[in-house]
Image 1: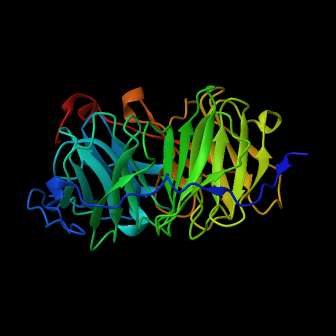
Image 2: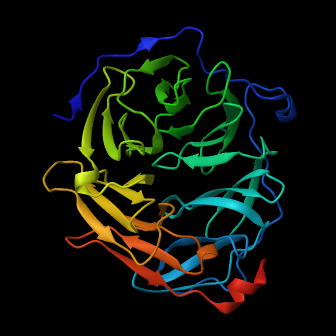
Length: 351
């Protein structure tokens, strides 16, 4: 009833990835940024287990989360440049971030050592990582272009990329293979999906999507979770680069309500949806062994930033006054409150 299995999309010769280093990246075929000497190790590294790294906009940085979810506390922020945004990947020892000037960095954790990758792209630039964090993408939705980052974490290389020949994009996600899924606005107010392969080929996908809420690839797969905020539906897109198909795996009847973020567990077993309405999340079993499970929260989920483990996520920023995280594993996934601190609320910088 919900399944629409279109065949392979039509290749569009005029839509392609233009991989060339911008002039400020020396005009080479690839750019390998030097190590920055700005950061240094945290003066008081956590002595216990780390449950992940929390993005705390109040102190413009990442803060180690010591302990286990449900019994954890925040440490002082990592040393290094003051950050405007950050996307952590604790399982692979890195984060992708921008500083207050917009420059893009890869940040080693737990040391906080930054490596500058590029200058700012545009004021509206966004960051996203592939599930394994080997690839990253910094892009400007308004310009429809950005930077493709490969070789993370130890040997990052940066290339400029055009996500389409002209015009803006609504959203983008990158896979472990380097394929990029792009949501493109249409004149009628809906969006279309395009898949850009790692080799530069492009396809327009015949998808049921109307308005993009969020999208994310699964680990090691050419498949993605795609949330439609117009019809409150989550789709599972499979074999996107070859014989794509889309099936609806959850809708409003299962608890999808204005979806604004999606993510996959590290093992690819579950998909998670953060709702923009109703103060709830949803866990979807991608093996279809169990029905979608609603997860309540005394919060308004705004994001799904990876913490350590298989299915741990930061779901709210400290700017909202409190921090909540999701422990998505087990038979009963739950949200947990992470105590904040007065110093973090007032510091606005390094503690």
